[in-house]
Image 1 (cartoon, rainbow, N blue to C red):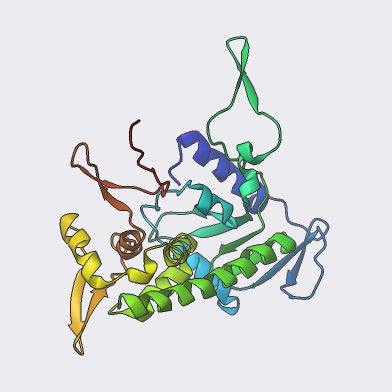
Image 2 (cartoon, one colour):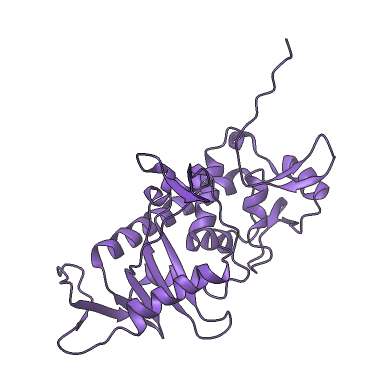
Length: 285
């Protein structure tokens, strides 16, 4: 997400206060090896080598050196599927730490019962904007090749869901390859499985009404019209889209498939849109 200075400071203070600067002593904490069946006490912190927990390693890899970060998709469909967020501390290309926190759609203020109001200039008014609430807890964090679990219940919730999402993303990638072949399919499937936002988008494509009729021939005019840097190769007599793994290109195919590229009938300008809200044309009476 793109953050203001004050918002970034909030998350920076959060991770500093909850993990890095927390006094650690024999009385305050017990550092234990991660045990899948052990019921963690509030004073316990469990740890493991990151390489021994592949689902967490894959999640970190999705956000490692990710610059710029993809734009936050605030659509209802995406928000309902949110399982966690990650605070990444450190510059891309350098040493980084990853702080994970469980997150659900209920954290959006407007989904709570009642009316949210605020006071300004002596008058109370309703809050109409989409406002998200972030607490000051951290469930686990990764640094220097080590995983530290602070809140085991939410840690399990995050990565059990992440593993299920990965499996669905790979199934969706395989279904897509059957309709629109991808030249370097394994790299494409891995990228979609490793990054939750890409996985969500690819899974959504599979549910679109036009998925059953998707062909490379239908996509090529869109690629040409919008000047998308997506190549097409012929391999063993089959024409295939070419997936590029670098940050500037890895989103292009899933955005193309999800019909993100639009042209205005009023201005004839080209746009990239996240919302999939449909407008039904109506005849004037």
